[in-house]
Length: 155
Length: 389
Image 1 (cartoon, each protein chain N blue to C red):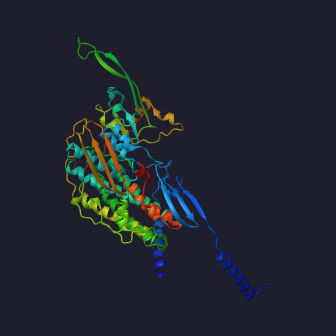
Image 2 (cartoon, chains in turn red, green):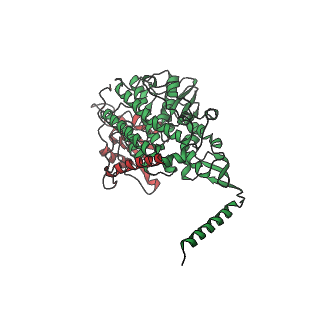
Image 3 (cartoon, chains in turn yellow, orange):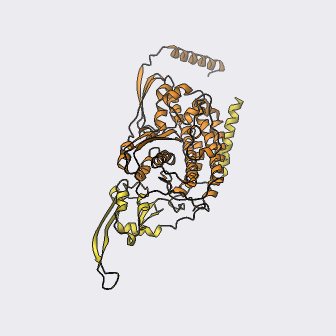
């Protein structure tokens, strides 16, 4: 019987100590935790960097990126040259209902057009509304943080 | 007006009546009870068809497959970098540990070796994930046997561990941080101090959990001598991980066939004696403490250098087959990869700890009482995604 009481008293001691400690929870809508710069919250698009190469579309494991574009003629670089042929981005949609947040598209992008942002408040009442278009993805570029400083052992 | 004598008389009469009622031989009959698939105590969508005689279990048939997502088939149409995003989700409580064996297998087939810094960091993050996973056990299991308080303590520290994991990998649950040939990125500058602080906090919460649960008589009453698994039966069923070590078998892949940097660090394998629910809980608490010391050692001896080896841009794995296993928090996690050349694996067989661990349920639940079903189920610490894949 004596052992049972010591076990219970020890446990009560732990909970009593917790009573005087400050709370660790955050009252979410009123205060927000600062998220890490690497947090994968949402994918942002830097529109001017995109060359419609389709690498992100092909590497996506669940095929949730939709890109459309067309070829256009741009003025030549040098005077008297031939007009250049450039790809123009018409549509860049990401279906966040399908997205697995793996980041492969951000990684494969050869022109640094895709970035991760820790932004997470983009819930929608309807699942179809989670398909976000080029304007929304461009807006999120404002929230992309600087990458964190690396450890001294990194090379 | 009643006197004390009258009261004693009526009490005696009531006791006599109660005795008479109990002594009647009631035919309890057989009853079939379906626990699950939607039952909070079965950790997801496990269904148990239990045949009861009164409060005693006559037989149990576990029915699995409600969470079958066909990962073995899905990885056949995805290339190697894409596969890690899927296998992360097999066992969502220990995502980082799931990636390791697959990546190691692909690296062996490609004959690429990850740089030492990447190997050390993989080991470190793997142990961190183990701590987070075992802390989930210490919040769910006491809850199932009737103690609510430990959950708040375990989850508080688990959140800190996941926070450190997130600062490195970018994901709390699905890190997707391993690449064939190394790691995606190096650790941020703040990692070392945060990690050391978190490990101190984890050791502290282990002391608190020890006082709250392991030393608690009510918890012992529910778990000591319940669900005893003898070592030979456990080995016959292929039980692995902490559940096997609780039976007294010192089998740990980190020690018996070391992978990553586990041969560079000193650590003990905690083993139990009786193989009951109490031992299974105690083992996990000691494993958390061992893991914190592993992390401390790895942080001190972390080599500098790159974290990524030279890897071709398009990964084409040569023909061959390989089985690579690793110690998941739930047991042996292994991938049998068959490659016929090309960018996608031809066939992948996934061996997961939880599946083998719950196959001994028929043995464990034979003849126990109904409340003990929940105590035994929780102590095995399985994840249904890991069972069904």
